[in-house]
Length: 95
Image (cartoon, rainbow, N blue to C red; front, top):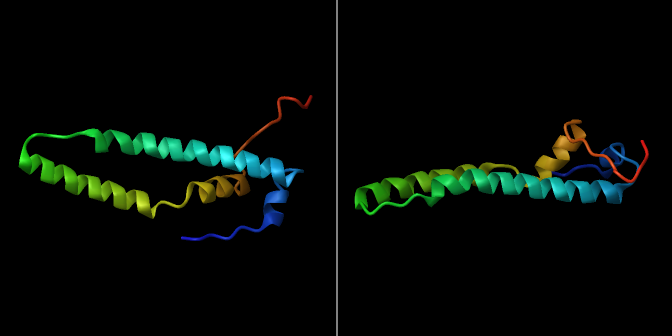
């Protein structure tokens, strides 16, 4: 799923596009780390029983399919910014 976002929309979210892109990169990393954390638990389990192993593999395949269908973390971060759900501030500024 390739989404195209208008840079003009991003510029409306802040005064400097380079700062905005930096923030989006950081938010994308947060999103991917959260997804990895959520997926790691179900994928870690392993069993010695062959039947249980087969069932676990099927569950793992389902988890991978769900992950593949998610939008890219960068797209998710951009959409959060455009929707006004992503807030940021510069601690060096007085405002």
